[in-house]
Amino acid sequence: MKKLSIITINLNNVKGLTKTIESVVSQTFADYEYIIIDGGSTDGSVEIIKQYADKITYWISEPDKGVYHALNKGIEQAKGEYCYFLNSGDWILQNSGLQYVFDKNPVEDILYCDVLHGKKKCIYPDKLSMYFFFETTITHQASFIKRSLFSTYGLYNEKYKIVSDWEFWLKTIIKGQCSYLHIPFLLVYYDIEGMSWTSHFNLLEMEKAKILEENFPEMYEFYKELLALREEMHFYKDSKLIQIVRKIQMSRFYKKIRK
Image (cartoon, rainbow, N blue to C red; front, side, top):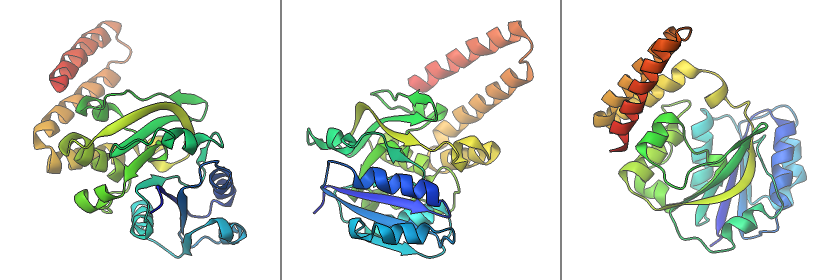
């Protein structure tokens, strides 16, 4: 069995796909299979895939039902111990990147490194908590997930458009108490043109609230409180005094979450 299944999904992003593929096939680490799920591109992406066919274990180009459907199709084809999702437009920063991750033979269920968002470095904490996931998330472009977890906790929930990976982290790390390891290493460039964090903010918050309501009802009330505080902070953004009061309230709120 291969150590790693690298899964790339793509739809009409020939330039980004080329960059992604080149960063994978140039790795010094060789214990991987490479899977590409294309959504029926018409921009020359398929021709690029064929160009690297001898480096690709499995690929398909056909219409899908969205990002998470495409990722699930990749998982269903994967045979490695860990799954690694590197979307078209993202790339591994160094040729020795994957080698660095697996040199010490980690055994944890989930491994995660740091990422470069545009020009901004995103350095994740060693400890992940509900408080952390209320504020942000770890990206799958810098994470390695044991394939067995998808059998235990299920594939990505295709009813959501943006935050099914966030739901998966809550199910595995928070509820399931799966083991994880932060590898403090800037692994990957994350294409910030993706939908999740650059647009559709209202949909993102709505989906996160729905996930909490269904899976973490005790945390759902906290989350609604957080959103209300944020809204008040925004409404009174020109008032320094009220901003200070709201920051104190936010601080007290986070203390409750950390308990």
